[in-house]
Amino acid sequence: MRSIFAILFILGLFKHAFSEEGYCSAPSGLSTDAKAKPLYWKVDTPTLSPVHLKDLPGFTRSVYKNSHALISPESHVYGPLPDWSDTTGAYLISPEMGSHFLMYLAKLKDNSRSGLPLPGVERFIFVLQGTVTVTNATGVSQLLKVDSYAYFPPNFEHSIESDALGTIVVFERRYSPLANHIPEPLVGSTDKHPLLETPGEIFELRKLIPTTLAYDFNIHIMDFQPGEFLNVKEVHYNQHGLLLLEGQGIYRLGDSWYPVQAGDVIWMAPFIPQWYAALGKTRTRYLIYKDANRSPL
Image (cartoon, rainbow, N blue to C red):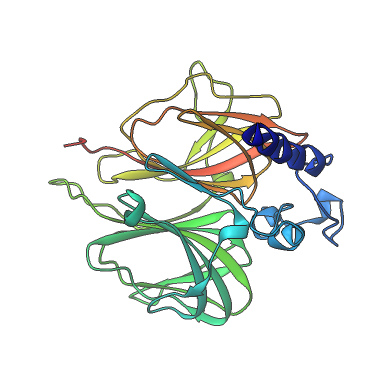
């Protein structure tokens, strides 16, 4: 009986937390006009953020199991990033939990500068807030704004710098070489990629990395309108690392069903049943890592 009351209490929290755009237990102090906000603003300022949980000691939506994890923003722990200057980071997915890749958020400040990945490790970055400058070993620089990204092959000399506040999400993994195939560095933005066909599905899909054999993973941008959902209840060998950029919905992971919103991170181990449905009144957009082009052996 006590467990039933506990479940009803938690459901009650979510019921009273809904507003027109999603979970909101207290005014944020920001304009409610979404058009006045920068893209992906809820990743850094989620509506169910730590300030809104001050009256709920010990409460978190974060969950960790051997087959999946949900890491919600109130659980992020920031600290100095090794070899980065004037930068703090929160490691959200790492091999300690069973993944074969690393995913973290990096918060940049004035005069921030990245370090290099470990030898043999490739890196992908995606800009969430602010702007960053990426520079290669020959001194060629490019400015990356929100919704832009860069891929750096293993052992590729580069730096990531900022002279103002900004946030990026970073993926790193040890590259799996394939004979006669060499990955090239990439710089691009989401809006430059065409929509791809998704037979049997209704979501919109963009792939930010070429699907050629030189690359051993990809980053997808997936858009769902309210009420849209995955048709296939996926079970596969690929691992996933997901960041909700916009919107809210319900994610099924194994036998569990989780309310999720912009700012949430999800890790999915191989062969865990997975499914998503978008809720609310605005689109869902998420960025998702997927290993590819290599045999599971």
